[in-house]
Amino acid sequence: MRNLILLIGILYLGRAVSVQSIDNKRFEILSGRKNEVSTKSVWDQKFSNEKYIFGKKPAETLKNYLKLIGDNNNRTVLDIAMGEGRNAVFMALNGYRVTGIDISSVAIKKANALARENNVSIKGIVADLDKYEFKNHEFDIVLCYYYLDRDLIAKMKKWLKPGGIIIFEGYTIDDPVESKGNKNYLLENNELLKLFSEYRVVHFEEPLNNRRFYSSFMGIKPQN
Image (tube, rainbow, N blue to C red):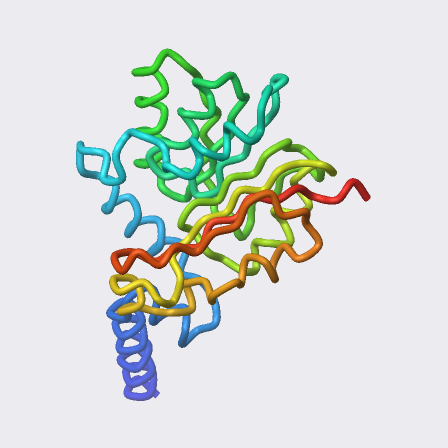
């Protein structure tokens, strides 16, 4: 009996070690579920550098989209996977009331610091997007830059008000850098047009500049 218990303990320990040794993306594929602790630690480590790894300036496309939006009328904005806050702070500087959500507490801390540096305020939320819920029709604008979780699309649509604006941008499967990794995290060509097929298209582009390949979309949610 004692030998049997010892054998079970060895097998359990071996399984635990093997799971810990699997990298995060591999864990997701094998288990069918996300390793939340591992994901958070990976992103915390990624953002731990004092420098802003994606810079402090907003995405170029966001600056162009803001010209199309016009008067903000004190609109509310949700920045999905906000990261270090470059886009969130830019929107706050232009008078929007911004909420940003990210799984990394380190990223949220840096985003808040960037907001203070620019004398604006944003609301940063540390949470797993798979589990966190906002109210239906809570936001006028939803931003999602370079974060692709197709299961999250339905939630984003719920959180956006009727007549609200979605701005979504990400790398495509043609990108020479990102395509070396897991292509499940990359957009297919024209995929954003399909994911938001019921939305009125304001702008859509997939530049072929032979350097980086991305898809960028701005659309308006139907009123009903």
